[in-house]
Length: 337
Image (tube, rainbow, N blue to C red; front, side, top):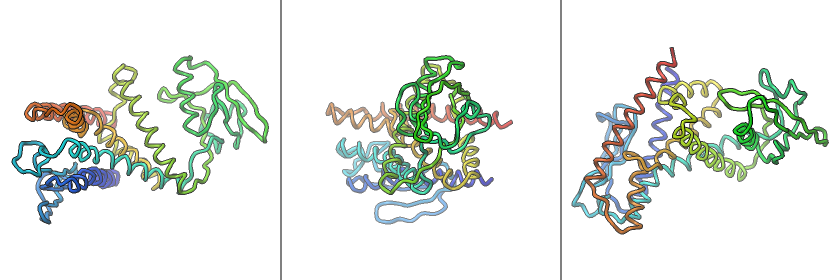
């Protein structure tokens, strides 16, 4: 129950941020906003302020910023569909962009308070392959397969690149720095969930304010690249349907992160925010990316997209998304037993 409550609060917060992005740019662009709502279904609280109704609804499964003329034709001169294409583009883009900015700030906050992972060994995991092969705490990994290691992410990146071309039993070259001396070893790694691992926990190093901001937004970029690669793997068949996780899986993982501490939970919140922002940038009907794409198309071609055709694609995309969420949720529920 604790995991469910935390998940609902965090999910609603991310939706609030996302919809606020749409809301603030719509207001600045002169687009009429009829309602700004958190949750779906019957209203449990509402307040009219100016032209906009602010409401909280019964079911905590989303929210919306209802702009005049966004989903249907309107004669109002301040409607979304009558706004210039560039205003519509930035209004819709603001939602996912706000999620990505928020994630960057969350990652920056976490790194400022906890430090960031270095390339030095802080401890070993259970059955660590490199501990068994003579590595020690405080050893600094400086090269993998001849490639210079600048940060902790470079370690997993180089391991994955190497084992995409080599077999699981092949050894990989590691150069370490120990007591100002360099030692090179060929080591065998272990695999978990098809990922090559050395089996160590990195030492954390303190970071300053500006460095933490840089780290935070670099983390957002790394996650986006990772998601693009996951999509490629799904389409090419390298990853199966089982790799996807839905609401049940997210709630389960959120509970696990909450038990590990507030910083882990905040980092996971940032991760979900990146997911929300990234997938809403994809040109999929019913998601923001579809409207971003059509607005961009109109900006470039100066041609108007047929509203009725767009509505049909949106309905079709919405049905497909609901179907996918349902299938993933069933898969997650089955995995619990």
